[in-house]
Length: 108
Image 1: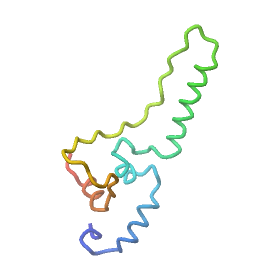
Image 2: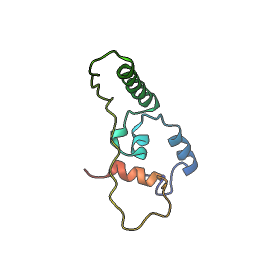
Image 3: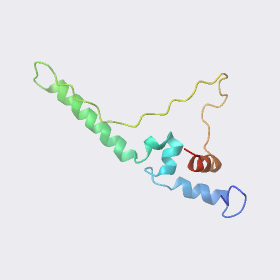
């Protein structure tokens, strides 16, 4: 709160700290699309891809009369964005510290 009001550490220092957060942190999850992304770092995405690749390889190379249906590894679903009336001129919007603070303090 102090940074947003202009007191406390410099914004550059806070940005440096936020950029160094692990990819499984809640702050990175909120910036990536929501709480469903919490805990899904690079290693977990890669393990899910390996799991799916092994399943596809099993189906492709197995000697089956009817290949088994192996479900994919459950992944977090992206949030559905409401349709906008006017197109956004800048497709990638940066997430500011104030936006992250608002998402942490939002009433549910």
